[in-house]
Image 1 (cartoon, rainbow, N blue to C red):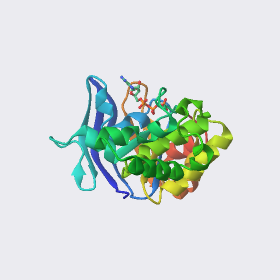
Image 2: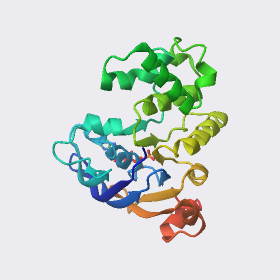
Image 3: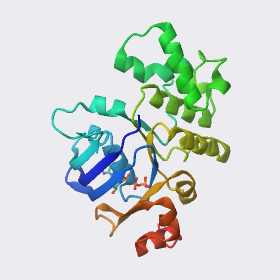
Image 4: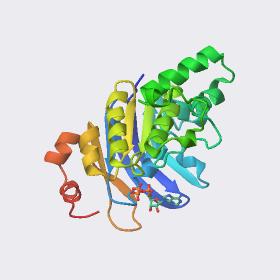
Length: 259
Ligand SMILES: Nc1ncnc2c1ncn2[C@@H]1O[C@H](COP(=O)(O)OP(=O)(O)OP(=O)(O)O)[C@@H](O)[C@H]1O
């Protein structure tokens, strides 16, 4: 089930470098939230802090609170692997496991989490996840063929199927369409609309039309100057953000005057 995310006073470091400073926001359950902003302002860094992926980089750390379903993800004793199951992620470039079939790609995460499953159970998960990712009809007759044999857009939907197979509460997407052609992009955008009934979705995008098309809320990140930390300038419903933003910097960015 979709959950909200409450972010308080979050600072994110790479070693001594403060990359993102002082973020506060509430990401609504069952909504699509987009992060926009110029290159280097910390959108991806912040996104990765939402499922404890940031800390896999040596020296990287997060301060502050990120609460999902009443649980602060950064409290001592919280298992980052359990967090990543609850908060799934889809990356910029489709990254199916190269040696695995379509079928095995879908259940790869689930196998890690639950171990062995009955064939009938895994068949059901594979079908449900591929249907959920709008890919079932295209691949149902070749589930045992390699995942790498699919088109880029199909591979990205396969990665979405893999992410939803473990039934997360939140789905993070880091520029999921940037490597895709317009038709595949449109298929992923349609899918995002459908998935938000079941998942809280957070998407980083460079494409402002995409943010306007797919999201309910938008966060605009910016940098005061090169070398300064990125910060959240404004967080508002997407309609307001694009029609009547609160901050002049948001308006300047949205209207293409910088970035
Ligand atoms: N692995 C890393 N080690 C050190 N610094 C990093 C690392 N990854 C990112 N940074 C720095 O953190 C800051 C934020 O980068 P990040 O990639 O989050 O920005 P972004 O807004 O997502 O940029 P883009 O839109 O170009 O993808 C930048 O100054 C970047 O150089």
